[in-house]
Length: 202
Image: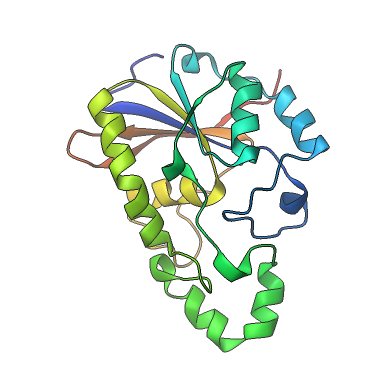
C-alpha cells in the first residue's frame, strides 16, 4: 500500500448485501448470510490497487467473512470485536416499523445519538469502546490492514474521526459498495484518509 501520510492505514469494507439488507432490517449480531444477489455483487467488486499486500481481518459473522473470502481469495483472520452493533430485541425489525410502534419514546432514544440504545442491545458509544482495544492493536502492529465489517462499525469510525455525535445526518455520506480509508495515529486518534473509494469494475 502507498504511504499517504503518518499513521497506520486502516481500510474498511462493509459486507455485501443480504436478504435483510434488501428489506432494510436491522441485522446486528444475527448471522444473516450473503444473498445470491449479494454474492454476485461482491464477485464484481474490484479492489483499489493500494490494498495489495495488506493484512485482511473480518468480523466473524458469515456475511462479512464470506465477503472477505471472495475479495481476498484467502481466509482472513477473524476478529470478534468487528461484529456489528447488537440491536438486541430489535434484530430483524425495520426502523420505520419501530418508529410507528414506539412513537415519542423511539424519537427520544434516537435523539441520544451515541447513547442510543436498542432494547437489549448496545449503544454506538459501547461499540466504539469495544473497538478501541482492537484499534490500539492495529496501531501497535503498524501494518496496513483491511477490515471487512458492518454498517455500524464504519459509522463508529467516522464518528471517532470527525467528532460526530451521531445526531442528525453524518458529516460525510458513505457509499456502501466502496472502501473507506482511515489513518490511526499513535496518539489514539482516528483520521479520515479517503472515503468512498470505488470498487466498481471499470
